[in-house]
Length: 573
Image 1 (cartoon, rainbow, N blue to C red):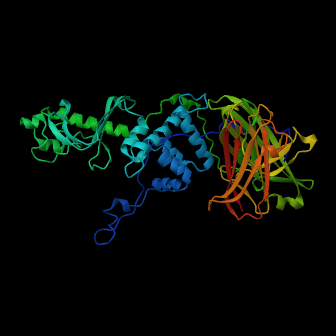
Image 2 (image 1 turned 30 degrees about the vertical axis):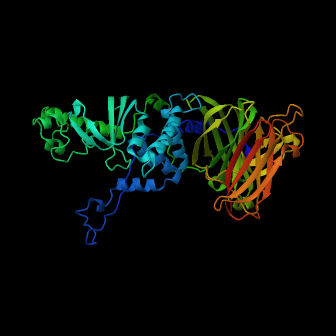
Image 3 (image 1 turned 120 degrees about the vertical axis):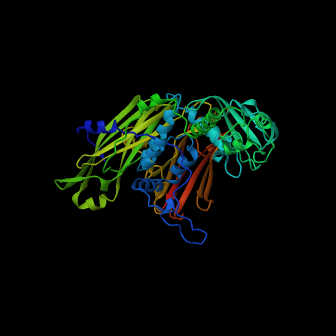
């Protein structure tokens, strides 16, 4: 593919500037549609009497079909990672997205909307959220993972309470006056007090009761659920019930929830307040950083999008600057070719934009690219793919990368969006570039260094692009696997002024978990090595069985005592 420099790109620029995702919200759904169960006689309940047998509406059928299309990773994110913090509209919007690229952008923007410091690489909200999940799993598990429990739900959604009143063994309990007073015996229970919860109120008390005595604490809106003597006549009476001014039967039936001699209206008001608090706690917390909604980029829904894949890598330039190669791959069969003078020519415009997560543009690039094929070779060429490459220098930090392409001779366009985080290459910290699996890795001609695509230093390294993006790279059985990676900041011996490190390569069959190849290199064997080391390994795949493999590279710096491991998966066909 050769660049052309004369074609207009303004239309595609406008298209790319509209790239992004539409966001809404949705609370977790804990149950799926079910068919009717057999009755006691083994016969199915009639459609008239069993609402679960009624045909699904068109809207519900469509929603279920979209949900079935989610990958296991997307489904886990939706149903296990964020079920308590994703709003109703967000969940509905996520289920309507049609491909992985859109879902990746959605997830990125989901966290960005909640990030209190969007101009920094860290997302404190996201980090705290996953810390809470880990804490819940460690402290609240009871037959199910801790995050699935009621205490886990509240902890993940609203954080640790300001105070906890715990009664892990239950037993004798003196009710506070506002709950009717008097002495009773209780199941194990906990009261969590929050000074304030947005959307719920001030001085919020959340009560959890373990009625089964098996550590399964359930959140309740009924202050009597913890009362072990609730259904025992003339036992565990409130002060008003003991004095004959209130009836325990009314408390049991819910007519007098506090068992006090307050008027009916006050008692009912208290009951409804508790129920309302319970309902509000079940909702997803409000997004605090609503001003970020203005920064969201609306997504263009294309009727006939042209598919393509993008890979991003990074390697060190200075301690706070990286070179970021962006590799774009598309199938020639998706490009429209026009015949002229015995040559079939396909032309694609490519526009790229790099922004900070706050929307500031830091880099743009655009290139019209053409593919020329003799007429007689067109049938063979359309079965292949073409690759475009652009390397951009960027400072350390987190960026959003958008790429848009347009088939000049046709009417199809495509959009891709992703993020990349570039590290600080601190002088005293062992670090690496991306690990690149390449289909071409060879010495570059001297006259092409710095000018030709895929040239890094004095090597030509053409990455194998994942298809589709995010999936393991694929190699044919008769091809060679080439691995390229740089290691930075190796410590040097004060006497020899040389580093001392070992590099272990381990190729493992993922399905069987069996090691296929294990080799070890050392800096002593590599000759004149400084604090930066370029690793290049190549192996034939004709002796490797088809399947999914993981290549792991472990670097052990003997002087600084630092160890670093990198790995990547790939498929052998």
